[in-house]
Length: 335
Image (cartoon, rainbow, N blue to C red; front, side, top):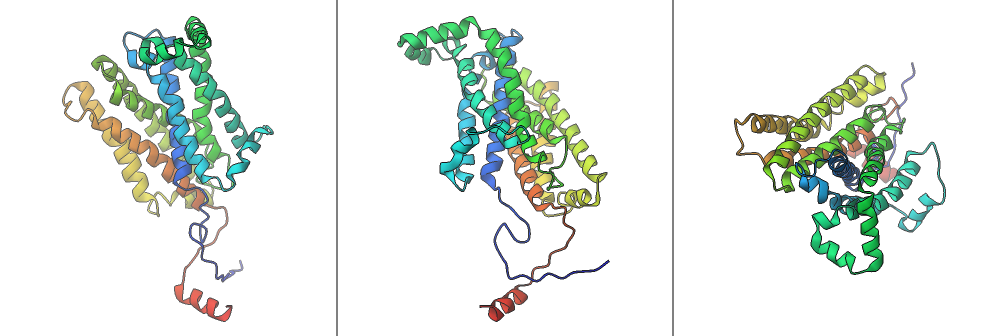
């Protein structure tokens, strides 16, 4: 085996020695995309399952959050684009093998169906806003149509919302060049995480105690599922190739260990799991509003850590050593 020593004067932030093209803007986009998917799923299920009385906020008011949250995510994604004026090119073609192409077209569909979902319950959830829409004949007719086909709209929303949630994970897992992302679990993990954060959002903003209790129980189940999926992802990396194991080291003693285990696993999963268990069992309700906040923090932390650790992982087997003295000498010799 021949050992090679490569000396370079390159020193670019976020590029050397690890390539970090995507920063917080993309992490926020992935977070908002998953949260939007969860919001749309729960709003649709509340209608499809006939839970309007038990979960009135989810059934009549939650849907309005979807386009708002998604627009925030799309804005941060737009900020990340280098050539912003070329964004329209995503919609000049459709490539079956490209997750980005699928995602771009899923987003095009999600916006109009989310509007239909809002209009189907706007009179019950937002009567003041509905009165403004009803002033226009076309708006009144559209609301009437949406109310008539409310169940059908709810059922049609679910597959597109699920696709949106899974897409946020597949967008990363499809990059085979990054061992940390190269896991079939990532799409389902991001979907479940998005649903968990959406359940936490309902707990925060709903008014009725029964609805808060229902979504606390739902979130508890989703957190347990998320813990299981995280364990599967770590096991798959640990049982993979040498480069998968090296990628795993970034969260098992490496640069992202603190962020992964403290902000995501502990703050985002384990502490909310404990608090929600205590609340449901009736032992303690004093910290009831803390758990959903921590779930939201953990949901973002998951995307940020996975994004950063994945970009640092590589199939190239080499170790980098940075020497400021050597770099200075190289610059002096090659002005």
